[in-house]
Length: 223
Image (cartoon, rainbow, N blue to C red; front, top):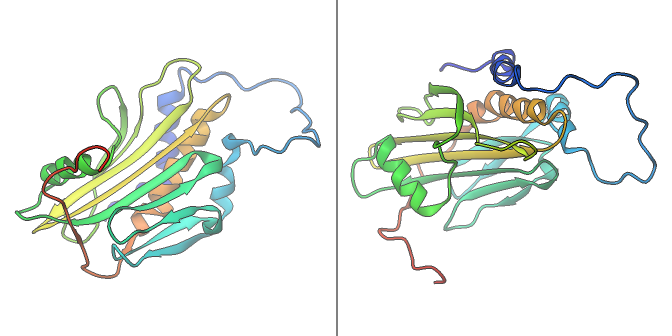
């Protein structure tokens, strides 16, 4: 399986932001005040680089996902639905699911069905930094995309990972979105995406063949 090295991913983002990133501030860094209680979300990424990625198992969907500082994540793994992990301080959300389909599954069909069930990152207007075929789960035609959502000056930077694949009558879907704002936001988002590709997504371990059936039709709004 091809892996994106952390240095390679960092270079991809450096090249993307190199022309537009603001120069680093001059002079000594500001001294933090004792009253500051809100964590600097731009620093979350550097912390994760030093943190141990501990396994978190989804008994419903049959995989084990490594997460940094796993106790700081809010996890939802309902019997019917998506495995969702949210990290509020960094505005990071992961959603993943194994699905069963009635007919032969491939990447295009799996994506269409997945988008009926959950809003996924849109490619229109986005900048795809990297796109690669990965053997996850084994035998699936999964493609992993690393990208940045369109944004206007002054708005938060949002990055995403999107992986979709199919095999036989099964689909696998994984998405991560993360946001940061202010000076250094580009670096923070790039660091997080690179870390999650290398230390979490590519280290997903599948424990069972358990999959959940996809509903034939999207339920009406409000029901």
